Image (tube, rainbow, N blue to C red; front, side, top):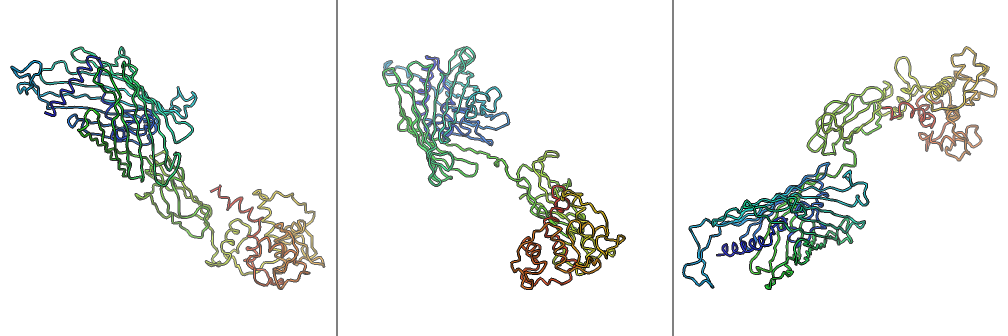
Length: 639
């Protein structure tokens, strides 16, 4: 009997529709359970796949594809079912939807013979097929930001505007009990717009549903030839993010509170009142949402006019990962004793945020690494999930599901470049990382761990210093005064060639500067140049003593003058140096410039013979030599 009552109600509504030539649009009543729980207040809030049934402009905010379905019962008998999905592309967001209502299994009736015509008795007529009805709508939807559309992006406020449209295709049928010509099809069009004001916590929207003119196909046509129009609806909505962690009026822990309000107007229906929709959604924690609302509609007042009725709605949503389960209860003033429950299951695939850091990183070796090793262990990580393959120095390299990779590479003496590229395909490079490695040439007599092992090889490879013909360096060996001049002047020549020394050239009129340095001496020109530059001064008797081993004080003086280290008042940095000593101010300036780090806390020992290792240490500490290295071996941009 319940099905019989429902089908009678259905036929009565259908008769009224035919009398007014008004067709029913199922998309207005079957969005998803979240929207129903909000009292269908969704025009301004529109932010997920449910926008297909409310305001298609809301599709434009989707970052990843979404799916949603809903099922439920109206008056316990009338089945509601909807499916919808959207997919973002470079050309906008496209969506598809299906919304259908149906009932079946209602028995045909007949008037019992002999019953009072003024109070007829209806009985089931088993000779007639059961009655039923379905009303389905297929929706093709599109939404995009106005600034991404060439024809609109130059208009004002397009950076805050989104637009959308729906093409709706209808199929409906009333069948059974000898009904003929009950099949129908139709077409309609929806338009939508969303506006984001400067205040991020509020949103506004407008939707115009069923705006295709009757003459242009905006109608439902039965096979019998009967035609009905879909009433146009203008909806204006707003949404306010009162609480939230982002784009909200206030922040209160994890709480999110959203208010929504819509107004519906029916310009093509005479006497149809304006209705409202009000909704609130509270998320105390990210896992759950609690909803409530008021869904207004029009109903007969019993005297032939329409009045506004307010139906309460309630709902809850459960969130887990990309899944969302929604339940809604929707009361109906015309059926107060019948429960109406609706269920939705939705899935949103949110792509990883646009990667703004390094798509590929090399963890080992560190960039700008200096080593004596012949191989390098390379370890790193792929951080951009779009990368499908990587290469290292253009050779394929595997990486794990966690993005980790490792391998070993041979290193050449000198400069080495290790480059890892991450690619989507064979040619599209997403990102790359590089590690620059300098492999030093060791000397066999400079053992691993020697205190100036790296500076010795670094300066030797830069040709600032040289080893011996047998391949050794002899770090503890002595250096003569002539050798020191030669070393410094060759360094100056190299620096001028590479451009790190831009000082004016000196003119040497004679190579016989000192009485004991003959013009044919192998180092005569270097000694003369050093003297012209003020690097050496010789002894009071006019000699230079080129073959004498240089003392620590003499060697430091030559290096300091060569590197332009200023002299400073002696401050007692070394207890065995008197302030009146000729080298005291030079020692003080060199100490403050960092040339004597290896002697801190010790005696200076002015007359101690300078070793080759000490000479390397002093030179390596000077800004002059650092500038020279930065032009070549340590110019990492050339790797």
